[in-house]
Image 1 (cartoon, one colour):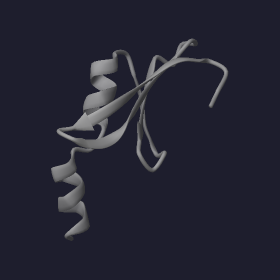
Image 2 (image 1 turned 180 degrees about the horizontal axis):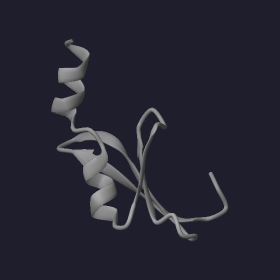
Image 3 (image 1 turned 180 degrees about the vertical axis):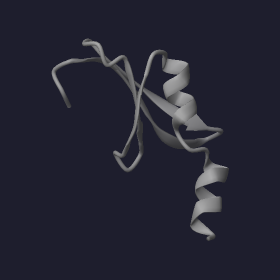
Image 4 (image 1 turned 90 degrees about the vertical axis):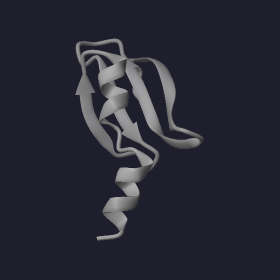
Length: 65
């Protein structure tokens, strides 16, 4: 992890772990990371970052295609 991270929160969809929200000390703000360590971008608030992570239903829909 980068030295500029102050905190990390786990994000769940029900009981399923879907990722993390990292709070950066610098100008980047809050970063959304899924459980496979893919970044979904940075956001101004932790709520926006958590909402950017795909839900379990969305992940299942993508896999069935």
